[in-house]
Image: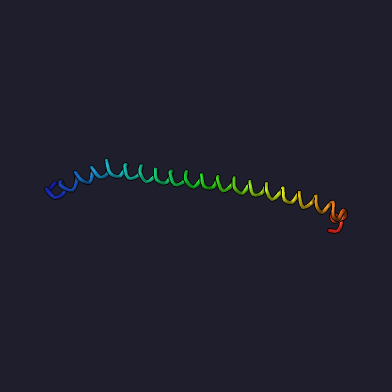
Length: 78
């Protein structure tokens, strides 16, 4: 081998042995962290939606009770 190819061989091997594995590990660590953060946001939004749905159900029950008192045959009109 000539001197130029020997000078490129050592940095290339070091790059493949040290830099590429670290690069891959850090790349996938950031993806895992982003996915975890996104999953937490989705879970919190799901719980918010569930709470709002419960409130809506309570309101509908209250409206139905009022309608039952005010207009007893409202259910049969539909």
